[in-house]
Image (tube, rainbow, N blue to C red):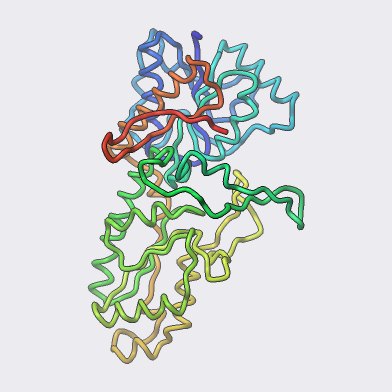
Amino acid sequence: MKRIGILTAGGDTPALNATIHGAVERANQLNLEAYGLIKGFNSLYNPHLPHVHLNPLFQEIPELDPAKGGTILGSSRDYVDPENKDQLDTIHRRLESLGIEGLVCIGGDGTLNGLQPLADRLPVVLAPKTIDNDLGLNYRSEPDEYIRRERPDRDGFDYRLRPSQTEFYLDHMVNYVTPGYATAVYVSVQGIQRIRTTAESHRRIAIVEVMGRHSGYIALGTAYGQPDITLVPESSFSLRHLVDRIKELYDLQKNVVIVCGEGIVDEEGRDLGDEVHSTDPAGNKILNGASEALRDLLIREMGDDYFRSYRRGQSAKEAIFTRKVGHTQRGGRPVLFDRFYGAQSGGKAVDLLLEQRTNTISTIQWHSERGFWVDSQDAN
């Protein structure tokens, strides 16, 4: 193998450039040419296959800064249709015409699905990135515990997880953390701490919404910022119990900070953020705002009289406010952990290509005795 391609796909994270940097540095060490494909999978549909040579004369281009967030290659949410064989053949020919013999895709679960059809035609590996930290397994046998059922309402299948027969240990997790997650948590924690001082000063109830459509890892990570209550999408909540707890805390300290993931669900399992009837370019249902929906419920349940009795304002609307950390979680300078292990993950992906281990993921593992290290796992 003499030349590889690198692309970034899906939503941006702070560790993308660091991962590209690690892949290019490893390519330099192995005397491999590295071409960056512009705008992710979208470039594969362009007859000219827009690209940039990332290591001319086996020297990294100066524009590639691992300490800078985002991706110099650009990204898109276009993916490859596995059913369109003619299109797949055309894409393969375009890659061959550029001399690309292997492909490193940097992305999340959507990118993992997108690279599958290409893996039958050339070596393709995934270097994971997602701030949601939801690209892993609790243990290696976990996929075997899913039951597939045909959907009665439309074409396709549902997957249900059977009760686990395996004891859970952190040491057994596959892909313990993904590059970008640590920075997202760090930014969110700063937001929580800043909101706290406002809530204390004005004796308010603050609801802070963080990203994580169906993954509560970021919300859980903000425990470092010491919120009073954390709500995650994986666990439904009882509104009655939540209101009781908020009142208990408010009576005690005269302010409450609540953190919620954007995909939190009520007791009946419904998304609190009200899924609207449209999707983003990756096919994910758009959520309308969990924090605002939760605020409306608390205003209704707690009522104006509760706050008037404390002389904390004229209404519940005045006392309860929301803030979204938003896209600041995904951008900006990555923390050291993400820079280092993002680069390690990118370098591992290049090694996997040379080993012809197509359809494989470079993973970041953790063990209580060994600490962190980079490994790999079959994508299937």
